[in-house]
Length: 346
Image (cartoon, rainbow, N blue to C red; front, side, top):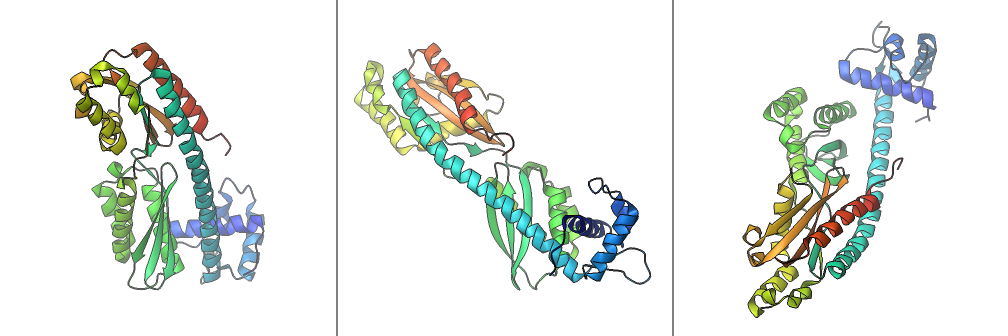
């Protein structure tokens, strides 16, 4: 396959995209309307003539338009996959770097918070709330399997193998990719309604079963519960307060910090209050965690963009220094946002 220069590549891509959308042969006048090309019809005709000589497009019958050849489809698919692979790789590298940095910072933050307040503290790594589909890439693995790569909000990448009864040709694969991305990109699971699903299946025709499998994979990707990472510090500070140092009460609180399931309930309660993304205070019986009913619990939700949310929590006696606690939480919210926010231009 001969390497094409940038202009020929853009024109070939425009021809293929237009043909996939309309099913009609594509002429130079149609291609000239693509705003990012800025080429005259005459220049486009010359380039199309070269592409035809090279075997990337063909002229069916006596039509003035051109359609992609198998070689043209192959060029388009290979470039599309290479581009998406590069995007996925960059996303993974960024997320790995940020995750490693995040774990170190969060451990330091929760320890500092315990020292500054003299209370028990916790913080969670961000989780992805109300995920949306960013893009979907289908590619043929072998005669019996398709790989679906699903990228959701927060640049989380999930892979799903989908069985097929027979190999799909390049044109079918491209049409399915375009159909899925055009219909689903930017949608949350709640927004993928029955009407959307029915339209997708109708447009996919005999390949509607593949659409069903992809939709199941999308739902699993969005709903999948990652292990909630909770970092804690200062649990023994509880013993500094007589009203909490009773052996049974203290034991229950320490156990909650060690086992973390109850802390996860506290986090879920905090994140479920979507309108309360600031600081929340639970006093005594207001606490969603039974073992903390003799305490005050102050939580804050921090946001890192792209649907990422985390929770900071401080647990202490009801007579805690609320002003100091709130000041610490407000400062941390700002600092975490500044530390982990992806710089513009990255």
